[in-house]
Image (tube, rainbow, N blue to C red):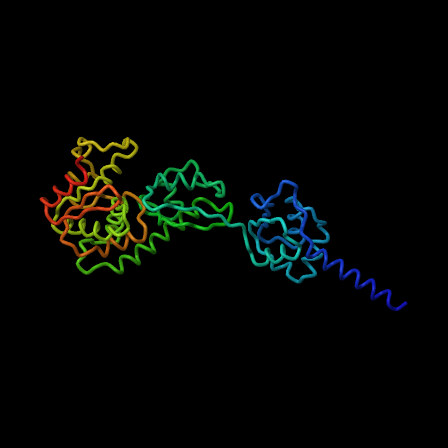
Length: 328
C-alpha cells in the first residue's frame, strides 16, 4: 500500500495546480468595463491582502489565498496600490499582478489650444481623479502644485497623461506643469540667434498666440515669422485671439470693431509687443515655431477660409488678399 501516500500527494498537487489556474469568481455585476477594484494599503501583510481581496467581492476562500501567497514566497513582495481584478484572473495571475505593481491606470488628455478654464474643467470632470482641488481658487491650486505666484495660463503642456486610478487632480496638474517646463526649456535651447524673444516666458507667450492663430500645421513657422518680424520693428501684432482672450467670458463669438478699439493689456491692436501672459496651452510644434520662426519677408497674413493662411510682404498685397479671401 506504499502507493497510497503517493496518490494522495498527487491528488493534492493536482488540485492545487487546478485551483491556481482556475478563474476567480467575481461578483455577478463585474464586467470587463467595471472590474473589481482592489485597494492595497502600504505595509499590508499577505494575510491582510488576502482579506482585502475577499472584502472587495472576489469569491475565494481567504485562507486558501493567504496560503498561496505564503507558499509562493512572494507574499512580502506585494506592492501597495489600486488594482483591478478582471474576469479571467486566477490566483496565480492575481499574485503576479500584485507583485509587479500593475495598478489600474487611467488617462486624461489636455488639448492644444485650451485655456486654463478648459483645463480645469477637464480635470474636474474626470471620474477617475481624487478631486483635491475642489473649492480652491487658481492661486491656491498653483501653490498646491508647487507653482506659487505663477500665472496659470499656458503653464500646462497639452498631452495625454497616464495616472493611477484615484490619483489626485493636483498631481496630474503638477505633472503637466513640469512637462511644460521641460518642453519649454528644450525649445528655448534651440532658439534662432536673431530671435526677438528675450526669455523663455516670452517664447511661451508667442507660442500660445501661434497656437490660436494657426489652422494648418504647415503655417506655424510662417505665422511665427510674421509676428517675429513685427516684434523686431515694434509693429503691433494685431492678432484677434489676444483680444478675445482679454474679453474672457464676455466674448459671445462675435468680435466687434469696438472690441478691437477698446484698450486692454491683451489688445494687440492698441498696444505694441506681447501680451502680459500666454493666452492658451501651446503644443510642441508651436513652441518650436516661436523660437525658430521661418525666415520670411512676410509682415501680414489672412485666413483663406480653408484653415490655411495667405502671407504678404506689403500692405498692398495684404489688402488684395483680404479682398480675395475675406470680403465677400
